Length: 250
Image (tube, rainbow, N blue to C red; front, side, top):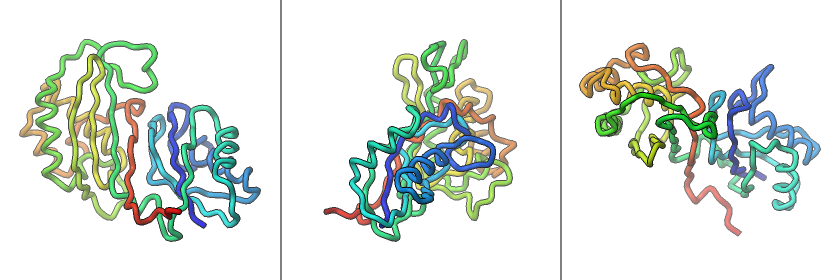
């Protein structure tokens, strides 16, 4: 039987989501915990990968388990085995062909910037000191993202993907006191895409580049034309959505 696992993690101590040699990752620790509980090798498949230091408030992964089990008991056991910065929220039975990555309808990210210093947010925000930002222009540029589909200019160089097309349906900056948050939602994202967009929009905010130059960067499909990537610690995967039809409702 196939199940979806809903989880969250603070990525500070991990080399991203995906299992890698000689590095501790979130996927690796979840695999080990579930394998211990079920006493058989278990490998989960995530909705996507996050880079080192990036966080997830909501991520789904699917897993196949042959024997029936009590979800509440497994939730208790797996969270007891996992470190405190990783949490499994729920386990839900889904159709046998449901796929955490390929069935996702949308993914939402937030990039969090703190204007000033806050020692309690050093691992979860990019802290900008003595920088004046034109947030109105940053939002004007963000709206432009909704009018394009090819985002190769914001993709990590030499990415092995079939297409650079993404359908961005939301992109906006919201300032709440000293916390400036970039919200973006799309059907899919390229590797490093959000951090590259944020870095380039910051160039708009500091008036290093113009709105027209921002358009030309997107049209260029050239990563070297865009701004630097924002640091990993400010990035959060916040939501992944799926069609309701893949879930088994008792």
